Length: 344
Ligand SMILES: O=C(O)CCC(=O)C(=O)O
Ligand SMILES: [Fe+2]
Image (tube, rainbow, N blue to C red; front, side, top):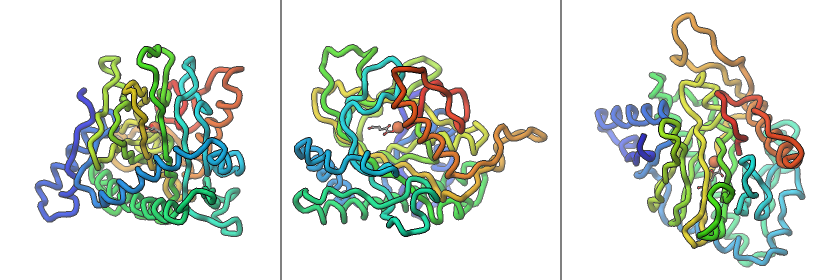
């Protein structure tokens, strides 16, 4: 299996039906193989991408005490900053050498979508003391909106890979929630032990699809089960790495794959990346997709709401992070397939 192929997504927006069919075929191959591919030719403006990446750098360049002002422990709905070393995603490795900042739908505490009712919902925690924070906020939310649109388009193509109409996921995507994560990986020492050093430990993602913008520094690797090797996903300016998450794998009855990946930053440089985790409408009930099981074959998993499926993964992840030293990680409730490692 080669590294994830680079697909020209612009044909999705054009009239060339043959090219569209080819795109659907290529995406299907990737979904069956390891659930990873890259896209160029999407509609997210390059200027907006550059602006976001610059803000990501500027945010993490702030003094530690400024970043701690917006620490995610100040809320229970997964928004704000997390320090270097606060996660261990892979059993037996060093704490992840990365810091992060989470953004989501801007939802007030009196909104019906507020936590308790809906998945990871609540107000964002903006770095109010950072110079030009209004631009940081506006740029982040504009990008967040653009990523929702791209996720819907990617899902329209994925629907076609299953011989479904391109609007099959319409209900799932209306009222969808998602999480945008800004990430900074300081350089890992060149002589660091590959057995222990991780920017982000091997894991699978929780949701339906993840759309990842990498900066210009490499380090992302995808596990190849056939050769037991890790394949480098070399950054391409402006491109998105697309991968399926655990919920989609379950939804597709394990026909499509949510694959292990990790980051080791051996470049000697600061690495920045921006994943967008698309959960979907929290109330939507996922139940074995059409064309994902043989005739007469039962679905492997019972129906489950998006909120319960993705929510269980978050709970398992944070619970496990807190008690990590005392007990081994367990398989998550909602993960399809025998993934040995917790998702993020
Ligand atoms: O930083 C990257 O390239 C990957 C990040 C990732 O896999 C994640 O946050 O789940
Ligand atoms: Fe990931």
